[in-house]
Image 1 (cartoon, one colour):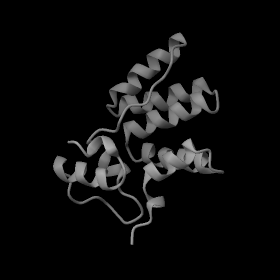
Image 2 (image 1 turned 120 degrees about the vertical axis):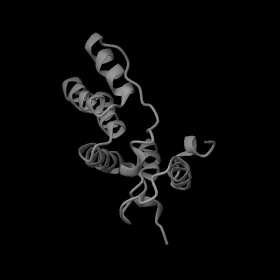
Image 3 (image 1 turned 30 degrees about the vertical axis):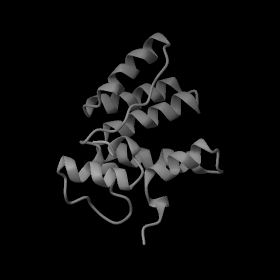
Image 4 (image 1 turned 135 degrees about the vertical axis):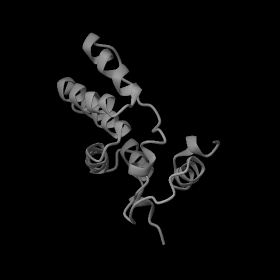
Length: 131
């Protein structure tokens, strides 16, 4: 049986609900996904640094990593930080899904767009359910 705690949306919701330690755990998982190559996760780490930690320099560094990995919203956020503007989250891309959908059960083997969207929907990424 799959426990929902192995999927990122579970921790996003727990953090939003201000569950103890949930935001820290979420940030640690996202940092690991960023290290594995997810530009989306790098952007999310930067958002956490900017919003919860008020660390704009660290946020910019993380978002620059996301930009370098091809996640365009991270590039936009780097520019916004430079001028003191608001930073924003954006949904992950198909390039991010093989990394962030992995869970604790192993690598994602079927990387076709249809399979990735179906898996993302099952794991709680609602924006993928209509694709």
